[in-house]
Length: 246
Image 1 (cartoon, rainbow, N blue to C red):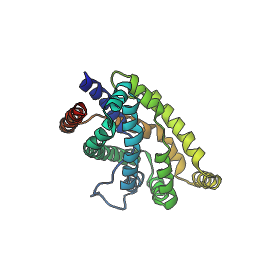
Image 2: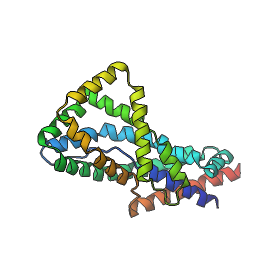
Image 3: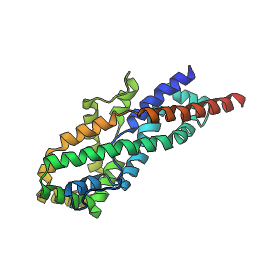
Protein backbone atom coordinates (compact mmCIF):
# COMPACT_ATOMS: atom_id res chain seq x y z
CA UNK A 1 0.00 0.00 0.00
CA UNK A 2 2.73 2.47 0.97
CA UNK A 3 4.66 1.68 -2.21
CA UNK A 4 1.59 2.33 -4.37
CA UNK A 5 0.88 5.66 -2.69
CA UNK A 6 4.47 6.76 -3.14
CA UNK A 7 4.61 5.61 -6.76
CA UNK A 8 1.42 7.50 -7.60
CA UNK A 9 2.65 10.78 -6.13
CA UNK A 10 6.08 10.32 -7.66
CA UNK A 11 4.58 9.79 -11.09
CA UNK A 12 2.64 13.03 -10.82
CA UNK A 13 5.66 14.92 -9.54
CA UNK A 14 7.83 13.61 -12.35
CA UNK A 15 5.29 14.69 -14.93
CA UNK A 16 5.24 18.21 -13.54
CA UNK A 17 9.02 18.41 -13.52
CA UNK A 18 9.21 18.20 -17.30
CA UNK A 19 8.69 21.90 -18.01
CA UNK A 20 10.14 24.80 -19.90
CA UNK A 21 13.85 25.21 -20.62
CA UNK A 22 16.42 23.47 -22.74
CA UNK A 23 20.05 22.44 -22.87
CA UNK A 24 22.42 23.58 -25.58
CA UNK A 25 23.96 20.57 -27.27
CA UNK A 26 26.82 20.54 -29.78
CA UNK A 27 25.43 22.29 -32.86
CA UNK A 28 26.64 21.04 -36.22
CA UNK A 29 24.77 23.62 -38.28
CA UNK A 30 26.17 26.95 -39.39
CA UNK A 31 26.84 29.06 -36.28
CA UNK A 32 25.70 32.12 -38.26
CA UNK A 33 22.21 30.68 -38.70
CA UNK A 34 20.00 33.20 -36.88
CA UNK A 35 17.30 30.62 -36.17
CA UNK A 36 19.74 28.32 -34.42
CA UNK A 37 21.30 31.27 -32.60
CA UNK A 38 17.87 32.26 -31.27
CA UNK A 39 17.07 28.72 -30.16
CA UNK A 40 20.48 28.58 -28.46
CA UNK A 41 19.93 31.94 -26.79
CA UNK A 42 16.59 31.09 -25.18
CA UNK A 43 17.72 27.54 -24.38
CA UNK A 44 21.28 27.87 -23.16
CA UNK A 45 23.04 25.52 -20.75
CA UNK A 46 22.61 28.18 -18.07
CA UNK A 47 18.89 28.42 -18.74
CA UNK A 48 18.53 24.63 -18.73
CA UNK A 49 20.19 24.28 -15.34
CA UNK A 50 18.24 27.17 -13.82
CA UNK A 51 15.02 25.56 -15.02
CA UNK A 52 15.99 22.16 -13.63
CA UNK A 53 16.84 23.52 -10.18
CA UNK A 54 13.64 25.58 -10.09
CA UNK A 55 11.52 22.63 -11.15
CA UNK A 56 13.11 20.19 -8.71
CA UNK A 57 11.98 22.43 -5.86
CA UNK A 58 8.70 23.89 -7.13
CA UNK A 59 7.68 21.03 -9.39
CA UNK A 60 9.01 17.76 -8.02
CA UNK A 61 9.43 18.22 -4.26
CA UNK A 62 6.37 20.47 -4.05
CA UNK A 63 4.08 17.76 -5.44
CA UNK A 64 5.45 15.19 -3.02
CA UNK A 65 5.00 17.56 -0.08
CA UNK A 66 1.47 18.47 -1.16
CA UNK A 67 0.41 14.81 -1.34
CA UNK A 68 -1.03 14.05 2.10
CA UNK A 69 -0.04 10.37 2.09
CA UNK A 70 3.56 11.03 1.10
CA UNK A 71 3.78 13.92 3.56
CA UNK A 72 2.53 11.58 6.30
CA UNK A 73 5.13 9.01 5.29
CA UNK A 74 7.82 11.67 5.49
CA UNK A 75 6.64 12.48 9.00
CA UNK A 76 6.67 8.84 10.07
CA UNK A 77 9.98 8.14 8.32
CA UNK A 78 11.86 11.47 8.38
CA UNK A 79 13.99 12.30 5.38
CA UNK A 80 11.94 10.29 2.90
CA UNK A 81 11.14 13.16 0.50
CA UNK A 82 14.66 14.64 0.65
CA UNK A 83 16.28 11.25 0.19
CA UNK A 84 13.94 10.23 -2.61
CA UNK A 85 14.56 13.50 -4.44
CA UNK A 86 18.32 13.01 -4.16
CA UNK A 87 18.09 9.43 -5.44
CA UNK A 88 15.86 10.39 -8.36
CA UNK A 89 17.82 13.49 -9.37
CA UNK A 90 20.36 11.91 -11.80
CA UNK A 91 17.77 10.13 -13.93
CA UNK A 92 15.47 13.16 -13.83
CA UNK A 93 18.31 15.35 -15.07
CA UNK A 94 19.18 12.88 -17.82
CA UNK A 95 15.58 12.75 -19.00
CA UNK A 96 15.31 16.53 -18.70
CA UNK A 97 18.20 17.00 -21.10
CA UNK A 98 16.93 14.42 -23.58
CA UNK A 99 13.46 15.93 -23.71
CA UNK A 100 14.78 19.44 -24.14
CA UNK A 101 17.01 18.41 -27.00
CA UNK A 102 13.72 17.61 -28.73
CA UNK A 103 12.21 20.90 -27.56
CA UNK A 104 15.16 22.91 -28.77
CA UNK A 105 14.96 21.35 -32.20
CA UNK A 106 11.24 22.08 -32.35
CA UNK A 107 11.87 25.71 -31.39
CA UNK A 108 14.50 26.11 -34.08
CA UNK A 109 12.10 24.69 -36.66
CA UNK A 110 9.28 26.95 -35.50
CA UNK A 111 11.49 30.03 -35.72
CA UNK A 112 12.60 29.06 -39.22
CA UNK A 113 8.98 28.72 -40.38
CA UNK A 114 7.58 31.85 -38.78
CA UNK A 115 10.33 34.50 -38.48
CA UNK A 116 12.31 36.38 -41.08
CA UNK A 117 16.09 36.11 -40.92
CA UNK A 118 16.24 39.70 -39.71
CA UNK A 119 13.71 39.12 -36.91
CA UNK A 120 15.46 35.95 -35.77
CA UNK A 121 18.82 37.71 -35.71
CA UNK A 122 17.39 40.66 -33.78
CA UNK A 123 15.70 38.44 -31.19
CA UNK A 124 18.89 36.37 -30.82
CA UNK A 125 20.91 39.54 -30.24
CA UNK A 126 18.56 40.59 -27.43
CA UNK A 127 18.42 37.21 -25.69
CA UNK A 128 22.19 36.77 -25.80
CA UNK A 129 22.76 40.22 -24.31
CA UNK A 130 23.45 40.68 -20.59
CA UNK A 131 20.02 42.25 -20.13
CA UNK A 132 18.32 39.49 -22.11
CA UNK A 133 20.00 36.74 -20.09
CA UNK A 134 19.08 38.51 -16.85
CA UNK A 135 15.48 38.74 -18.05
CA UNK A 136 15.43 35.00 -18.80
CA UNK A 137 16.88 34.21 -15.36
CA UNK A 138 14.26 36.36 -13.65
CA UNK A 139 11.53 34.76 -15.72
CA UNK A 140 12.59 31.29 -14.59
CA UNK A 141 13.04 32.27 -10.95
CA UNK A 142 9.58 33.81 -10.72
CA UNK A 143 7.51 31.21 -12.53
CA UNK A 144 4.57 29.84 -10.56
CA UNK A 145 3.13 26.31 -10.80
CA UNK A 146 0.30 26.51 -8.25
CA UNK A 147 -2.53 25.73 -10.67
CA UNK A 148 -0.57 22.95 -12.35
CA UNK A 149 0.31 21.31 -9.03
CA UNK A 150 -3.33 21.41 -7.96
CA UNK A 151 -4.44 19.82 -11.24
CA UNK A 152 -1.72 17.16 -11.14
CA UNK A 153 -2.71 16.14 -7.61
CA UNK A 154 -6.39 15.86 -8.54
CA UNK A 155 -5.92 14.27 -11.97
CA UNK A 156 -6.07 10.56 -12.80
CA UNK A 157 -3.61 11.00 -15.68
CA UNK A 158 -1.20 13.47 -14.09
CA UNK A 159 -1.38 15.63 -17.21
CA UNK A 160 -1.77 19.40 -17.24
CA UNK A 161 -4.51 20.92 -19.38
CA UNK A 162 -4.07 23.78 -21.79
CA UNK A 163 -6.30 26.00 -19.65
CA UNK A 164 -4.37 25.33 -16.45
CA UNK A 165 -1.05 25.83 -18.19
CA UNK A 166 -2.25 29.17 -19.55
CA UNK A 167 -3.44 30.21 -16.07
CA UNK A 168 0.01 29.53 -14.63
CA UNK A 169 1.64 31.43 -17.47
CA UNK A 170 -0.59 34.43 -16.73
CA UNK A 171 0.21 34.30 -13.02
CA UNK A 172 3.90 33.91 -13.82
CA UNK A 173 3.93 37.02 -16.01
CA UNK A 174 2.29 39.04 -13.23
CA UNK A 175 4.81 37.71 -10.71
CA UNK A 176 7.78 38.37 -13.00
CA UNK A 177 6.74 41.95 -13.72
CA UNK A 178 6.11 42.64 -10.03
CA UNK A 179 9.71 41.67 -9.22
CA UNK A 180 11.30 44.06 -11.74
CA UNK A 181 12.43 47.49 -10.61
CA UNK A 182 10.96 50.61 -12.17
CA UNK A 183 14.10 51.18 -14.23
CA UNK A 184 14.12 47.54 -15.38
CA UNK A 185 10.47 47.82 -16.42
CA UNK A 186 11.24 50.98 -18.38
CA UNK A 187 14.21 49.35 -20.08
CA UNK A 188 12.15 46.29 -20.96
CA UNK A 189 9.28 48.39 -22.30
CA UNK A 190 11.63 50.51 -24.39
CA UNK A 191 13.46 47.47 -25.74
CA UNK A 192 10.33 45.64 -26.85
CA UNK A 193 8.51 48.76 -28.07
CA UNK A 194 11.39 49.82 -30.31
CA UNK A 195 12.56 46.37 -31.44
CA UNK A 196 11.60 45.61 -35.03
CA UNK A 197 11.68 41.86 -34.28
CA UNK A 198 9.33 41.94 -31.29
CA UNK A 199 5.90 41.96 -33.05
CA UNK A 200 6.75 38.81 -35.04
CA UNK A 201 8.25 37.09 -32.00
CA UNK A 202 5.27 38.03 -29.84
CA UNK A 203 2.87 36.72 -32.49
CA UNK A 204 4.25 33.16 -32.22
CA UNK A 205 3.94 32.92 -28.44
CA UNK A 206 0.86 30.64 -28.73
CA UNK A 207 2.91 28.15 -30.80
CA UNK A 208 5.80 28.34 -28.33
CA UNK A 209 3.40 27.78 -25.45
CA UNK A 210 1.88 24.79 -27.24
CA UNK A 211 5.35 23.23 -27.60
CA UNK A 212 6.08 23.92 -23.93
CA UNK A 213 2.82 22.25 -22.90
CA UNK A 214 3.60 19.21 -25.07
CA UNK A 215 6.99 19.05 -23.38
CA UNK A 216 5.41 19.44 -19.96
CA UNK A 217 3.24 16.38 -20.50
CA UNK A 218 6.01 14.16 -21.88
CA UNK A 219 6.73 10.99 -19.93
CA UNK A 220 9.90 8.94 -19.54
CA UNK A 221 10.96 6.83 -22.48
CA UNK A 222 10.97 3.09 -21.77
CA UNK A 223 14.65 2.89 -20.84
CA UNK A 224 14.62 5.88 -18.52
CA UNK A 225 11.35 4.75 -16.97
CA UNK A 226 12.87 1.38 -16.10
CA UNK A 227 15.96 3.07 -14.64
CA UNK A 228 13.81 5.44 -12.60
CA UNK A 229 11.77 2.54 -11.21
CA UNK A 230 14.90 0.59 -10.29
CA UNK A 231 16.53 3.52 -8.52
CA UNK A 232 13.42 4.58 -6.66
CA UNK A 233 12.43 1.03 -5.69
CA UNK A 234 15.86 0.53 -4.19
CA UNK A 235 15.63 3.78 -2.23
CA UNK A 236 12.12 3.03 -0.95
CA UNK A 237 13.13 -0.45 0.23
CA UNK A 238 16.25 0.80 1.99
CA UNK A 239 14.61 3.81 3.59
CA UNK A 240 11.56 1.93 4.88
CA UNK A 241 13.76 -0.89 6.16
CA UNK A 242 15.91 1.59 8.06
CA UNK A 243 12.83 3.37 9.36
CA UNK A 244 11.22 0.12 10.57
CA UNK A 245 14.43 -0.87 12.34
CA UNK A 246 14.53 2.31 14.41
